[in-house]
Image 1: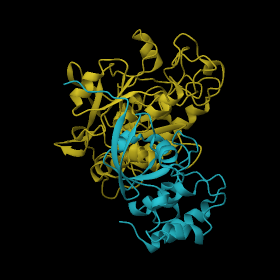
Image 2: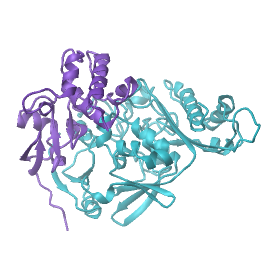
Image 3: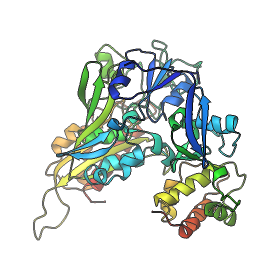
Length: 341
Length: 164
């Protein structure tokens, strides 16, 4: 790791002012940044530490909203009663996101800014192969090489990577907003739109851009509408704990009131569902959400609805299995959220 | 007001019960500092990327990876390593006794990290049963695969010294 100069910020504003210099990086937990420095994914002349800023801490109710400070750790969020009650999918996603040790350091502000786990991207410099994220214009080794864990939506010839954050999937499903502070002052970014697919970035003329956060902006926290809907976060991975997702799904379900004497499965009144690790952004199944009200909460009824909502999936030669796996994760998340499994 | 970025930082912290002040370059990780500067080699450098858990220490009682923590981030904090677990007279911590009693190691390389993680796991109240110990200890890899014995030791120590 190359050395850098260090300062502790006294306020969020003073931290943002230092970010006007592109050679300055922010550190909070540091669980991603230090590995970026080691691999050569990022380098900084200056590192500004926001870890001591009480204004960015805390989890609290704010009217009908839940407010989560950017410095809240994944363990704090995962076990906080306000979150487990009103945003259970987010609590579950946080607890499944990493080891207990990492979850004590990793913050929710930094978590959504983690970068892909693509092994071609995560190699130590000097990079032995082309990667457009590391060296724009060099090419994508994964496209012609191994890509079974890569995207099934929104990829381009330039890059096929997925965004691995678990909490980001829950935040997008729960219609959370990120509060952001930049040189021009505060603004909000809906978490449904925070990340960009490679296709969206290319259409905007910045093919390697990954989020709508502007250079020099800092996430200060999140605001999400508290929800009484049943929720679930399903993470499918190669071992039972402490592993990145192959696919994941977050869901929230409200059932119609059951009539006295009625039998069989309850019917869905409203549902939200988002997939993770299938694109460079959380993937809301909006077509399914429109179709789900009135549907019985059964596997048989849900499968065709999820399949129609995923009809535009474009798997790569090695990852067709992810289409089926993601469909099943979405169905399981909806069933669990609705209390049927 | 502009911030003053510096390349040598004075850090005051408490290490295994002793207050001390150290001057480090900002990139120094807690793990490298413990091993190279202080000479406490209990915390091991396995993967140096947060994957294996052999460098687990307690910071203000919370378990963390020493390789993912900078010393400059420990200003005013209290750090506990495996060298600080035993009592002043050398009597073993209940978790250490349980590891010895249940043969919860083979080569021993991961053991310091397992011990610190187990102390925290019990204090957090996450050592209720086999499944909760396996889930909440999953950040500590044992390539000798002593997991059944480690799980038994954590549960036994938790019964002796229940968490909150």
